[in-house]
Length: 136
Image (tube, rainbow, N blue to C red; front, side, top):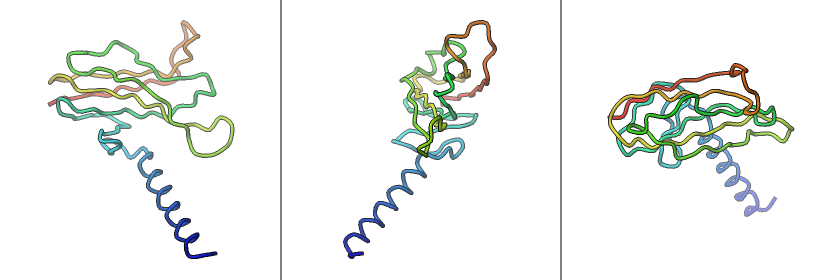
């Protein structure tokens, strides 16, 4: 292997490792893209901060995370959600659903999320998750 090819292979390995570390669910408050990523409660942020809640999700099962109640839009507003595919090439590999919010006012609120199949009515969610948010 030539030196240039070896150097390129090392650079790719370092980049992949850095990206994997950034995508890990490192508990409350890991940084990603300038905002904090939370996988558990409580969430402590300042007014004006953008933050993301990351939950394991597998859309191939038909399930998706959605808000279980309206947000207190005097404290936080939703900036949308996205799905990040998991690692691996197999069909049905779980990934993470990311919900991004902006803290717009001081106060406390709870963001409730439920893991449901949107077309099923009258069926209890497969999972629920509540995130207590304090905006200072």
